[in-house]
Image (cartoon, rainbow, N blue to C red):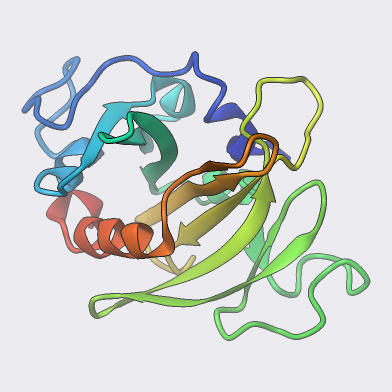
Amino acid sequence: MRHIFKSAFAGTLVSACLMTTPDCDGQPANHLSEAFKGIAGIRVERNGALEANDPATQCVDVSLVHPDRNVGFVCRTSNKAFVADMGISSYGDPAPGSRPGRRPASGLVLGTPMAQYAMERFHAGKMEFAAADVDCDTGSRPLYRATATCRVIVSPLDRPVLIYGSFVLGVHTDARRGITHAQVREIWRHVAQHPATQ
């Protein structure tokens, strides 16, 4: 299982593609980065490493402008294996002894190397998603360490195009604050309604 919480924040993955650029590195105008235009205090850059070898997937890293800090990433994909690689599955898929005790209303769970988390329903405008606060690793070490807490959001898996995001809420090793739940909610409300994510 690939754990993007770790690799997305290693600091060496990003090629520049700012949201203010109408056509970036040959990307069509409806690239995922377009969905972030108009969100105050946010900057995005294309994450070519996460898009590599998967033409069905577009990803951007998300940073706060003040303070200048990478706080997460968002991907749009029609490849359901992509979100499965991120640890998301139906509640019935993990073994009964390892999945959460009750079936969440979303029907989804998210597995990390440390635990399985129930994903609860999350609304952005009129659209419904599944979300959970989970352990994550923001470092670049070869072994996973749960050094932070991330907010992970995903579309219902029956949609033809899925939107997946992971945002760092806080880093435990140095008490750095990431992004707030309210900021994540505002970003997601804006992005989920943009034509580039449909």
